[in-house]
Structures are given as structure tokens and as C-alpha cells.
Length: 440
View 1: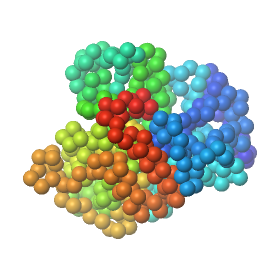
View 2: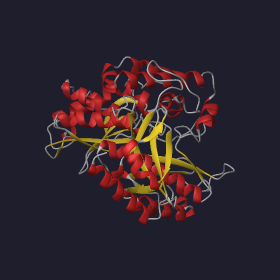
View 3: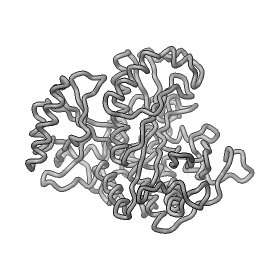
View 4: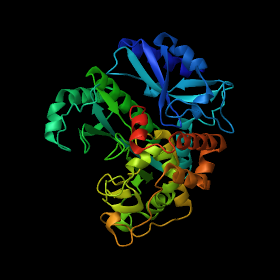
């Protein structure tokens, strides 16, 4: 650890201690979309920054139910990695007094980057864009469903988006808003959603790695505030096996020389040529990207036509049924609607960036846009993969994602997807939802 890092560790430890922090939770998100943690006493922060915190590589092949598979590069009891906290993101958890949180990067014991580290993958793709002169802004919407311990809806089934639901849980939402903003998160909206007991929060766009970090922190804060109210929060893509589930819509914009490529051009809806190519690359890769952004069988229970989930491989201006929605106006961006709450946010973002850059390199163009509900058209556009197995086939055929991820991470993702498909084979939708409801 160089002197600058040592000084930052001392300053961070002093800052957190002044806020009453006694322990630090380091988090990573595995290929099943589960946030895992190692926690340390705050007094050990300097040592953790110098030497890291030990963690087995086997977590790269954990499944959502905590069973374990293996891959060509990862698996078994051997080996050790070191988790290094990102001190710039270390923050006291407002809903968990005495605790702070920081995302972690994973390295081998010899100091080389772990090739399966999903956070480092997102950073590599961000740097790949920067090498082309592009900067990116991103944000995830976070949706969740609340229940009491007995399974009942604490909002008493208030209307979708209803002011009554806001009233029923006014204190809860106030405390959640305060907690999020106390942690430095720039909340844009927080409101009731469509399904019973469902809510959504959106935060301001940031760089890709920061955006993925923020969605981990947002969800942990929701868990913390919910627990203090005796409630449980589910981020699962399918809560009951039918009906509307929890999405994790990804908003993304690309910039060059301070100009937003999603506006100000001569293309459709003022897209620049480069912005159109970026979006065309994402649209083309969506069947394969589902293996990262809607990764398990439960996610495909959510991808139902005519439920605003983005079940068709198409784009449209302000079309909430299209998998890729172009958002116009002063904050022009693209929204990927088919991603859900089981996704590893670093993997989904990194893969989307890789696809967009491939589109730029190929000078790709968008097909004709789709207006209205694609399911009602005489000749609808292609459906996105309707099963996790079909999405895995598309992922396995994607040279763009394979090259971007690198063989160890690519193979680990494939192994987890195959194992989860087998785990839930022949299970009913209700059983799949029940098994994953409280996992994410």
C-alpha cells in the first residue's frame, strides 16, 4: 500500500468513526445476482486496504439457492482472493447504525486482477469506451415489493401508483428517502408502482461503475429501512409466478466531447449517427444480453407481452412496451426495459456497453421503430428469448460478449445459467417464484 492509499485509509477510518461506525460491510455481487458480503471491524480498515479481505473464488459459481456448480476455470474448495474496498464509496448506512458499506474489487493474492471480478469487468468496459473518446452515464431504476412477515401487503392493496398507498406507508417512504439522501444518493423519484405493495426509486445518472454501486446501496438501504418497520422487501423479477414483477430498467447515455449522442443529431428523434449506432448494437445484442440482465428462469416469467416488460426485440420513442425505449428531452437517454432485479448490475451494464461499442465499430443503424403494443401488430417484431435456455443459447453464440467478458468470467456465467436452468427444470411458475422471492 503506497503512502497515498495509507493516508486515505486513515482519513476514511476517522470519518466513519466520527459517524459512530464500528464495522464495515464489503460487498460483491455474484453471477447469480446475489449480493454477498464480508464484514470487518472498522479498526481493521487499514489492514484491509493494505492486504485485502479473504474470500473464496467459488462464489463465482454459486447459484441463487446457495448451491454450487463449477466451471472450466472456477470451482471447488481451493484458492483464495482478496477483497479491496473502494474507499471513495465507503458510506455509513443510515438505516443500520454503527455500520458502513463499501463495494469491493477482487484480486488474486499476487495482486493481479481476478478475471471473474464483475466490478472490474464493468470498469474495463467503461475504460474501453473512454479509449474511443466516449463517456457514459447510467442509472438503474429499483423496484421492490413489500410484505409483512405474515405475507400480507402493508399498503392494504392500495391502487397502482395511488396516493392512498403513499399515505399508508408515508413514514416508511419518508425515512427511506432521508436514508438514501443521507448516503449521498441523488433521488429523482420515489413512488408507488403497479403491483400490490410495489414501489420504485430512481437516482441520478452516474458513471457506469458508480451507477452499479449505487443500485447495490439503494437496495441495501431499502432492506435496512424495511427491516426497521418489520417489513420484507423483494427485488425478485417474479413475486408470485404471474402478474407484474420487479424490473431493473437500465438508463444509459453516451457522450463525446461533452455532447450527448442521444440528441442534437440528424437521425431519428435527433439521434446522432454515433448514438444511433450505439443503440443499434444494444438492440441487436438484447437476446444474448438477457443472460446478464434477466438471468434466471424467474426473469422470463416477467417478460410477458403487454405488461410493459419489454418482451419484444424492438425500439421506440417513449414506447414502454419496446425492449429499448428512447427517452427524449433535455436528459435524452435509452432505457433497457427487459432487465430485472435478479441481474448483477455490473455484468448487465458492462455487457450493454460492450454491445453498444460493437454497434459503433460497425456503424450499425436502427431498424424501423415500433409504435404501440408490439403484440397487437399484424406482423410483430421478434420476441426476445422466452426461456432462460433460449437466452443462454443466444449468449453462447455472442462473440461480442465472450470477448468482452474474457473466458474465465464468460465460462462462469454460462455454468451458473446452465445450473439454474437445471435447478428449476419442470418447476411450475409459482414454485419458481416462491424459491426466488426473497433471494435478491
